[in-house]
Length: 337
Image (cartoon, rainbow, N blue to C red):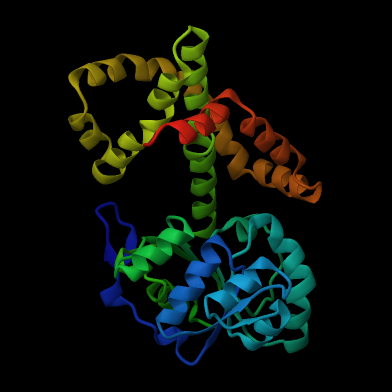
């Protein structure tokens, strides 16, 4: 049924999957935001009976109505559904589960399938689900807007698929039908585990995409302006040109990127790369990974959420007032890119 990649990963494609496991079933999408809206619209366009689940007075409810999506309060949608897609932010999962979902499940005592787009809540056991439930993962490898736009183009984003609990014996079939319905099997559904998806996702966010790379950009920008170079040029060189390299990395890989840059850039990267990322960096990366693997990060994040996200809010405020951010606002107003 599946194909194997060169490295042995199980990958399922559209010609090997179908909608059969979702036929005559109702899906409730809890969380009509970044991922939830895209999933719900794609499910609907694939002919699946789907309802958005939201607070009646919230923006999500208004957005769903504007999209022509059937929408109900969370409790009612969960009671109606056979498949519940929990697409809430990680910190919102426990309160919504405890207040709106578990009471319904305890009263109904019916089998449900729960679909997640990120493994954090299950891997770190921040929520409790019924013993008789199926728990599956369908995690597109990109933002919701891309899940939707590629679907409309007849394409799709790859997704990571996993089964944590399969009390019905149909967990994987349901996950693959769900991935098929939102367009992901057009690009490939890659088998993994909840833990592997969670650890690799968190590590890459922190080490590269949202942590390491922005800090390197900020430090490089500051180094240039401290030496008297024009902030505008420092901003363009250190931040705006990142997209040029990112596009090459995305489309051609590191080797392809190297072949597209000048010899000067190749030689400079050969000398400078190991000076920036070295054995000390690798030790710190290993510690970062260890903190994710052993639950240290998850426990800290759970406490941060309980306290109202003070560290996160302070960080965001500080970043918004940085020299780099202020230069970015100025450049948007004065320079057309």
